[in-house]
View 1 (cartoon, rainbow over the protein chains, first blue to last red):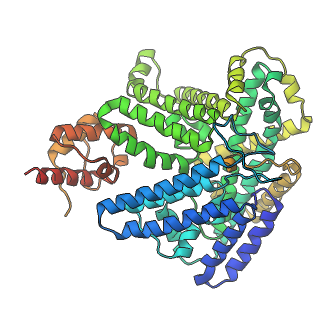
View 2: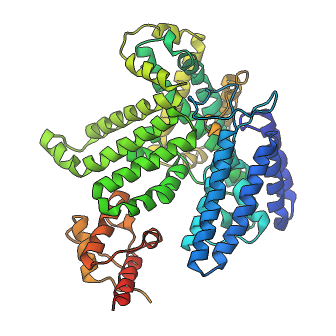
View 3: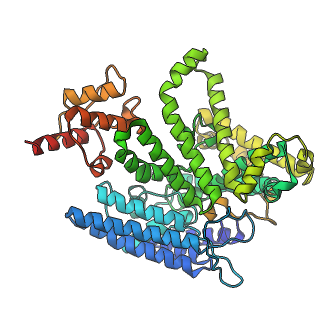
Length: 483
Length: 82
């Protein structure tokens, strides 16, 4: 069930109650059953089969790899594990088709349409736990991780429901020890968990889904538009995808925290990045760390005698892979390649940046930082165009018509009630305020230091705001659930 | 047995990273040293290989955790070549 549904908010407290009142040694079983039920609720037997295949093979291979001293055997087992996960990932990506809300995937390359009659298959979750399983096996192989022998706990590591749909992608050494440690109810933790969930709902249901109202009509029908409107919706889409995915992440991390589990942070104010490299240290962090450790580093080491060019090629290949992971379509390939290209250029540029600044008389300060953020944000937005557009042709049309006049911008803004726009502006304003608040202090500590009256007014106001302004009747599926 | 970081290794690292001085020890990791980011990492390794006239295996390099590990790899190669 999606996080932005009523069922989830009946499911979550129910599981929490059972979890709380179960004896500690069986809590893993409660969480595992709940997670499997959660995943099964998607109503797709292929997904359960994929999860079962990945779990069983990674469990067995992990123990075997950890238990053998023979290097050749270890290597062979590792490659078998990687191949199996890769195969599951590819096959699930190919046997899916998409209908319904959210944009359809960009023009696919050889996509098979095997959707069951009257239903849709989405490869939800597979992209995430296959990567997780691969990292688990590689870490054991390199000696930086240990195999988990408890099958239930291992299954839980892959499938625990707060993160099964869209990550974060957790390393074994981060999550498995937490699943072993006894659970003790902590009011402070629970409080932060609930507030985090509320924050996620705010981001997703109030902001992201509302922005989608403006973005979708334009991207779904590009030839009816031209000019500045494309620039505006690209900015709006940049915001939409951020609030959508970070909103999901907040709900995931908040939910996990209720069970005493700390998942990895996935976002760190990505649009304040001062370079594309910095962007990837702030956006979808668990994924970018994965591709850094398991694709880029090995490639870069392989190409180390190629100097800067070797690193550049490694970057391009890594981000090409990243694009393909998101989907088998030209839009994603272009998006990934663009990021790879930006990073490859920066490898050549970075060593000379200081001297270039000196020659231009630029001093490092708030102005240069602002400029860097401005440029980075626009490079990212440029790449988002091909990511979001329905086809490469559409993306091309948008790019060639970005400055073709100011027509239709009025039409866009008035396409919905004035109130919608004001709620957008107000909500984004609130987010901006929270960002500035968080720059110099811990937001939670700040909130919890206020008197009870202030805190509870805040809680009720937040709940009311979400209830009143949340998008219920045209809920959008989470964007990153499609990858 | 902990590897003692040789002066020669320290010199190569400092030279590649354009540093005048930095305290490099067994347990020093890349993120502790200014400028030793993932982009410079390959250059440092390649420079070490050239300095010592050796070639590491890619797999060994990926498993590297700190400078002590690098020194061990160098020592292993040197022991092997005697």
